[in-house]
Length: 418
Image (cartoon, rainbow, N blue to C red):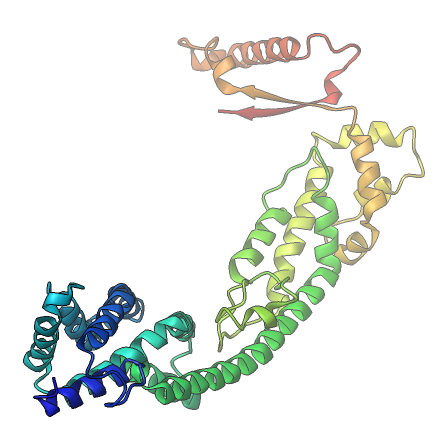
């Protein structure tokens, strides 16, 4: 090696670049010493090189930058190519030949030693990037940015900042091998996320505050309270009950967010668990549009309470409870809606249920009766057909009421079903 001073200089540069601080006068003439260092470098780095190649592949995939894989891994591929040669044998007889091959493969791969050193520096930065698991930080930040949803209009500054940052991922290699580029990008992302969270928190608060006011006003309506109470009458069912009202509200209005710690969660997720999106607008309808639906349901209950099916039951109950408020309710007319709403409360509904508690609701299928009515009848025999229908219906009632002592037909409510 003393016969080739340029070769000696090359090996000093190479060994020093790998982190072994040696000088020309310090055992550099010992070829075995140099060869031992090179073999150790190969053993220590080759597995990490292959791991970094895999990490780069994963990183590009997660950041949707697959076209950059080749460029990012190029320096890793070249050094791995150098280390994959088969002349790295710790044989004292082949040391000189090994050093020669090593130098030759570097020159043939890189052109000159300086190019190798420049490439090696990129490799070291790449390996450092993954040792620090900066790839995971980058993936988490990117995924957060991609989940930020902005409306088509407004938020122009935030939108431009977001687009500008996302565009910087097109230079992924620089982010990996230039620490200053990575740190600058991370700071920019953190500032954007901080600004986004501020806006999101304020809008989230205002949105659900407005929604809470709406629900409070709705639930405070005397019409809403009355229909809610009436819906707890166990026997009577109406079409315009509280169920479709609540279904309407659930369909067009979100529920109040219950996540008290959503502000902390926003550091990891771009949205609260309630699904609120920045810029989301809550269109609150006038309660005047809902009130008629509620009144319609209330009046339908009043109509059912007074119908021939239930009124006899209440009359029977009132004969024993003459001071009952049920009498006051039943005597009110539909146009007296204000008085109706005022009288309905929890205690009244409880008493209505008590009055109806001695009834027996029966489900009787039309098919059970129709089978016995099959035949040909003259139009002049309708009374006979009606009588036969009544007989079959009474038979079905007796069958279903078997075992129930002391009942009368005023206590039975029939629901004919198909």
